[in-house]
Amino acid sequence: MASFPRSARWLCLIALIPALGACSDRWGWYVVNPTTSSGWTNLTFLMSGLWYTILLSVTAIAISIVLGLLVALPGLSKNPFLRALNRIYVEIVRAPPILVLILWVYYGLPQAADIEISVFWAGVFALALSDSAFEAEIYRAGIQSIDKGQYEAAQTISLGYVDTMRYVILPQAIRRILPAMGNQFVYMLKMSSLVSVIGMQELTRKANELVTAEYRPLEVYSILVLEYLVLILVVSALVRWFERRLTEGEAR
Amino acid sequence: MPRTDTAPIISLSGVSKLFGTFKALDQVSLDVREGERVVVCGPSGSGKSTLIRCVNRLEKHDAGEISLDGVVLGNTRASAKVIADTVGMVFQQFNLFPHLTVLNNLTLGPVRSRGMTEAEAETLAMKYLERVKIPEQAHKFPRQLSGGQQQRVAIARALCMEPRVMLFDEPTSALDPEMINEVLDVMAELASSGMTMICVTHEMGFARRVADTMVFMDKGQIVETAPPEIFFTNPESARCQDFLQKILPH
Image (cartoon, rainbow over all chains, first blue to last red; front, side, top):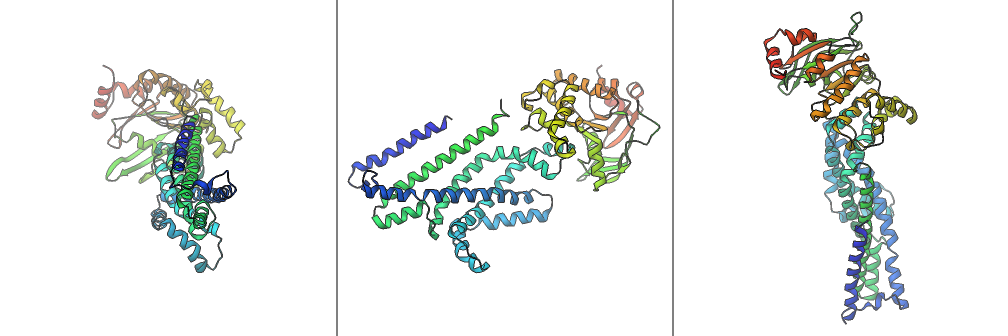
């Protein structure tokens, strides 16, 4: 738990910067001054995107964790056809920038597949798709790092492929890849801001709208930076907590 | 004592195994009867490990025939089943599951592949932990144990599958010298209970004490097969004499 109070201290330090900035006449903090009614309204308007940012990121991460594993497993097969499938997926899906993928899914896919897709699900789908290719590579590295003897031992106690993966290989692999996964979660949270371009009412979109109305980009975007900072510190703390929990038993 | 009145439980005839162009096994034939204790020795790279790894198909042989309890091994269901039902194995590097407690290392197989309940499997696991004399370590993790204790856990894990044949692949080679005997004692106790065993080992004292049959391998071939009293005093082949001279205390 040592990391959290330290990050809290950092947060105070960073919060000091706008406070100092407030002394200068270049800053107009009145737009987000919680003591005035218009400032408070603006502030709650900015914060109102938080729920969508979280919901979008968490849903996309949850999907990509599962999808990434499903993509990774054929890549570890002895069958060259299955390995090729994995390669093709990874290379194609991780190639387009996420922004491009979002535009393609939201504007292109409905036309191609004759379906309707909401802004939220287009965002989730684009983020999850893109992330699944990266997650797949992380899984592959993690699973490949497990000693061959573990598979052989599993085989000698008659475990099949699914049981071997589920009870022997993955629990060990996930411990090793957790830091890389945590990184990916942080990255996804940031990339969720791109979904603002198709009109998703998340943090960045709200900030953009407020900037258009108030003409105070410095203050509004400063708040936006702080919002992401807080979110990401929370994610890091959660990942670390989970890491510690997983390794507790094994390490003395 | 091995039974001589029945068909062999393990039978290899003309078995070959290639790793690229390297011939790990070259036309190997060997019969093992129920209750027989076979010790395989030979210089490193002679194919000892490959031999026993072919018996449970951790390695797939390229030529010849291996049969187990009358079933010919291959890519068949019957083959997979007879291996699962018949053979247990202990590795040089223990290969315990580091993320599971000792008890869960032992119960995983019985629960997942034998369909036992957790409670049944735990009773079974405790029985075999008693047998390898470390029941008090049941709730520890492998890395909290000494090497000798870990290897005894690995033996217990294999026994929990209630095999009829145990394969030992240099079980004491990764151990500190002071821990070798605790593992050999467990193996000797297992041998005296009538378990069919094939042990690849350099522990010649153990071999003399326990083996019914000594097998000497060199360059992928079985060079000599003899009961220990003949093997150690009067080996036929020059290669075997030479090997024994190098490893036996003078």
